[in-house]
Amino acid sequence: MKKSALILAGSIAALSLSACAGGVSTGETADTVKLSFSNMTSQDSPVSQAAIAMFEAVDEEYEGNLEVEYFWSSALVPGDQVLDALGSGMVDIAMAPTAYYPSELPVATWGEQLSILTPAAPGFHAPVSSSALSELFRQQVILDEYAEHGAEPLVVASTGAYSLQCKEPIEGIEDAKGTLVRAASPAHIREAEAVGLTPVSMSNDESYEGLQRGAIDCTVGVLTGARDLGHFEQVEYITPTSFSAAAQVIVMNQGLTEELPPELVELFRTTGSRAFLEHYAKVGVEEEAEILTTGEAGKDANVSIEASDEINDALDELHRTMLAEHADKAPESVQDAETIVAAYRELHERHASAFENNTPASREIPPTDQEYRDAYVQIAEDIEGIEAYFDEVGDSMFSQ
Image (cartoon, rainbow, N blue to C red; front, side, top):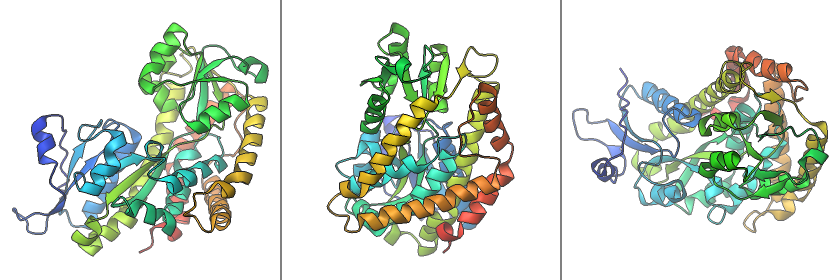
């Protein structure tokens, strides 16, 4: 029987309990291990659900002797303080987006930017970019960087494909000129400017009101984010694009690798990592399909979808330039940048081909509204294909 405990924390008392680092309990079961997990998103988010799947898979293999205390929605620690909390032992395992730590994690941030290789077509980013980046983050130079902060990356969750979500249609560069778009990251600002958009710095929490009062005309985001933020109440047009995805990294306190039984640590690196990635891929595409069929951007909603070849051609040209420059822009600690970039290109192609071969996915963005919606539905209905994909790429990722 599983003993994974779900504890929703929000009180000062709960926070005080969390200050104890994970370890072996001396309670009813001598070999029970108690760990804490912190995430900045809600329990219902794809990343949170994937994390629960990870812990449950590890617990099953560990004969039910794992207990987990969960802290959702930054109840334990804010997102920009997670790395310090991991290093100090305040939390055992947590989700730490690289976007919050460009100075502390320059190599990881540099590596994350290679996600521009992943096609922006339906269904690709959550499984392909996540699994390929997870392999990349096992490069020694990245492991060493996290180790400097007392942490170890376990697995990477790449966001879904980004799109332009606008109040008016963006059919090409001419429409984009002068259009105000929320673009928060440096990559998105550069990409927005490359297609003629005018980027506006604005937090996620301000974006709904920004759309409502006309401070912005569009936002760059993923479908699940637009749903959660209520954007589909304000926008009527989705333009699928290849704007850069972001990485959310599940990170472990490095001290646990010495304190916990070695077989348990290895389970997190193998069984747990696969369970996370597979669940994240399935939940991600299922939620996106639901949004586009019966949900907030479904056929009964006043939202239309149309890709722009001109916009995506301009982004593709920018990305080719970025990739050509990428090795030269590596942090000084990366001694073999060209080798790492070349190796990532190769492993990414292997992952992308495996996904294309095992599922109905195509690398091309569907040109029409209905074809775009149908593509998500077809992938979501082929869960066995997603499982077959991880069977194919898993040998190099999850072998003990």
